[in-house]
Image 1 (cartoon, helix red, strand yellow):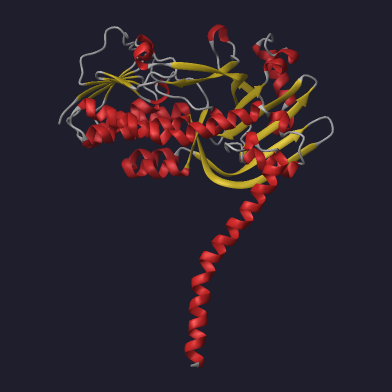
Image 2: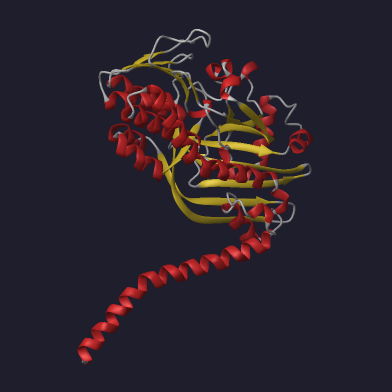
Length: 408
């Protein structure tokens, strides 16, 4: 069935949805409206993981191939703790991760959408009280969604601010792994997450408690002075490279608190929420872009399999709510781990670094950290033994049968 779809918001979710809809049926009439000029996107790099790339390749090998070609990747994590007495670093192998500049990601998806016949309209601010005529209007206009806000009572929108201010920065330091650095100051701990997104650049997210921000004067410093202090604090991991702030209102990089967005329902008539307009997850798990693209996959699939739009939207919401539960739980507990940093930061380094990797666990906040570490180590050994038994058991049985047959 040919449908007319208007997508409000030209971010990854909206663009990828338009691609999938045109691939399903070239006759679909699909338009994407973006309020900003083309190429004016803000931000540095975004992360995603191998599982997402595999899923995208199954739905559109063309865009997945372009995404992989223009991404950088890593398979190790680095953690560094520098306090008044210690300077400790550890490196460990983990899942394969990818980084790509947000500007490049949107450029690739826009090119793919245009090649399939999607209309892209930039500098187009769709009024929330005058929605375009369409079979389906998709609110993919981000965490501050105007379309969602217009009907906030219906959607049951709830926005919860996190406890820590953070600053999203860029740097010319190209990290070779996903890097954590924790630095103790006279006013408390401050830490950063760093990851590459191109052969020349990395993202660097700085975070700390409000008291630390005020004690260091970062809440009052101008951009140049604030970045200079942060470069000094993280000089060891930056290796002399500079930090760059994203211009905001007044031309300064802005300290913000993360906003967790939830909604009681995701659709109203023919209007549906997608990506950050529907839900957000804390940036410390690096899943925001992946979840937005997976929303697009689910919505496109629901529209393909259910010709009636109301039924498709209800199915999409049920499917994505269930799929999001593990990621949302992991994000909540990851954010809590950093809020409870004092609980872990003084542990012996091997324990602290191991629990950093376990920060998604719902049990960790309720078990003494050293006990959790010992239990996790014991469980890991048992799991290794179980895998070895499953692998070796049939082989030993065949070997024993072979010897018995020979001797018989």
